[in-house]
Length: 82
Image: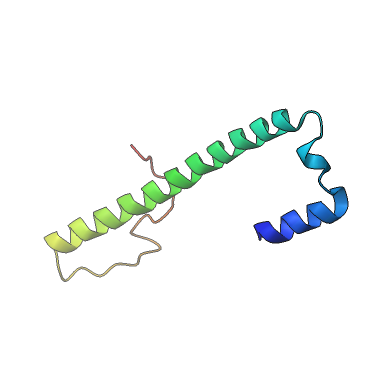
């Protein structure tokens, strides 16, 4: 995916991106976006892990328990991550 995007950019812009004024500022803004999306991904994975940990604990307490994972185990819902 990255290679395709780089090749498309090279065809359209050549190597001007490496020398264009303001590129450093654009890159800094993009890096802030990357950090923000990384946090969102971390929160989602944390919620899934908490849901799995809860399901595992409930199975230890009641090995005969049956789960409807979409309903009973939060694998990415709206629960608080703390």
